[in-house]
Amino acid sequence: MKHALCAALAATVLSSGGAMAEYSGNVIRIGVLTDKSSVYADAGGEGSVTAAKMAIEEFGAKINGIPVELVSADHQNKPDVGSAVARTWIDRDGVDVIADLPTSSVALAVQAVAKEKQRITLISGAATTALTGAACSPYGFMWTYDTHAFSVGTARAITREGGKSWFFISADYAFGQAMEKDAIAEIESGGGKVLGRIRHPLNNADFSSYLLQAQSSKAQVIGLANAGGDTINAIKQAAEFHITDGQRLVPMVVFINDVHALGLKTAQGLAFTTSFYWDRTPETRLWAAAFEKRMKKKPSGPQAGTYSAVRHYLLAVQKAGTDDTKAVAETMRAMKVNDMFASHGKILKNGRMVHDMYLVQVKTPAESKGPWDYYRILHEIPGEQAFLAEAESGCPLVK
Image 1 (cartoon, rainbow, N blue to C red):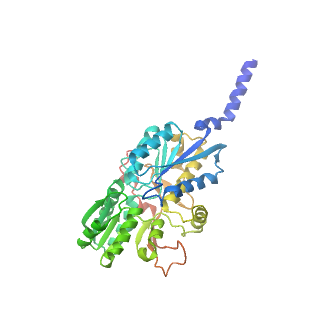
Image 2: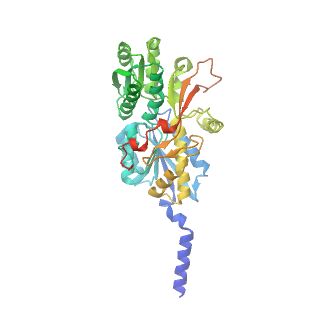
Image 3: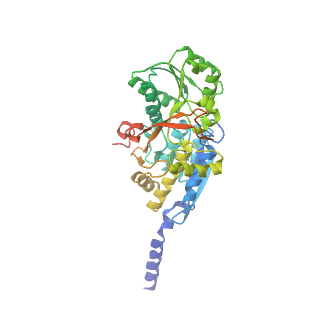
């Protein structure tokens, strides 16, 4: 009888303290896998690591008494490196979720590993729609933007304004190819046509031959389906060749860090679609000020997206009472996203987080009132218009 009573008491204690048993290794471990040294380091990199830390600190670095830890690494924009880090993190270090993942080829590779290992990915840096399409995962979430959203905002707007003939200079990997494809679909649906296209390697220094081919095409618009340092280099060199004197240069993906690097004299007048602008609301200004205090610069869209995605993940872990991948993924999908990044965001079955996007134009030096005062918001693009409906995504999870 005494032994039975002891056993019952032990069971009661274990049950009442069960929260401890619901967390693998008694720790919640988040990995930020990013570009720390190359073309996307300014828009992601240490800024994304800092953004994730800010989300963790909001919870006091603990969820239901369980510590939250952060690790980070540089994937060097190489899918094999990203995959190897992901496997080590999961198999050896017990990482529960991998965040950021700029570079679409790396994100596709890492999401495949995470799907196999049943771990969550929070993608805020990559843009190919394949991540929520054919390569979707029940544990994969795409947070910040994608190539379809950029195309709906920028290519559609420019074509409607009269930019009917285009020539594309595109990055030669998954992102550039997807961006080009989605933009061309928007251009052609608006009555425009593409006169030619050419692709360059990632992290390219010399765009002269590409720009001269675009110039000789006589297209009204030269579309840049690249990002980060590649976009900066292409815009700078286009200005040096005076290409924009007769043709309009339209970058499909621009981050505020790119505008800062270019300077308003060079960047003024550029129009593009963005997921985030630090000066849009009181909430974005407050968060951006806290970020700038640490990083000495304003946040990019991917960095703000990393913060939002990690925060939503932690809220889901808190609500689910566990870090079990399936339970947390289901909870994340069931919860609305409500923070400074997205005030009424929702997550589709394919993992796409739907939120509003913004068509912006870079101010002239005379219009800017101070450092980082760079954009005029031309109009808001509702999330339902910006992103593909889940039924059109091609994701096998959508039935």
